[in-house]
Amino acid sequence: MIKKVETSLAPAPIGPYSQAICVGNLVWVSGCIALKPGSDSIESQGVEEETRLVMENMKAIVEASGSSMSKIVKTTIFLTDMATFPLVNKIYGEFLEAPYPARETVQVSALPKGAKVEISCVASI
Image 1: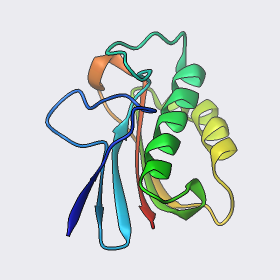
Image 2: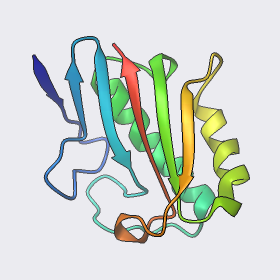
Image 3: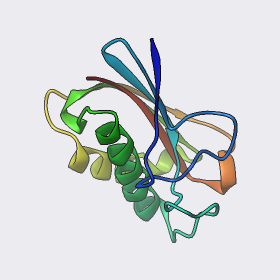
């Protein structure tokens, strides 16, 4: 059975997708960018501020699914500039604890709304 996850504590989707979908004992969280709930534009001043908001959005969605940040098993980080990785990695680490999720980080040419960072995840419920 597929169950849609939705919370007003994170931004609404900007396209035809869900904030997250639960299937079985897993929740698949869509890529989060630095939008504030109720906003459709990025207002951040830099990658550190964007990363913190991305992680707060992801946390709100994960918790709305009935899971928690400690149950994230996999993340994917998309960056428009790999040189920002140390800053992103530092803030990312503030939201997660050992054992850390499996992860890959890739540089992309562009992200929605001009974002500098986007993160998606899979968590157990």
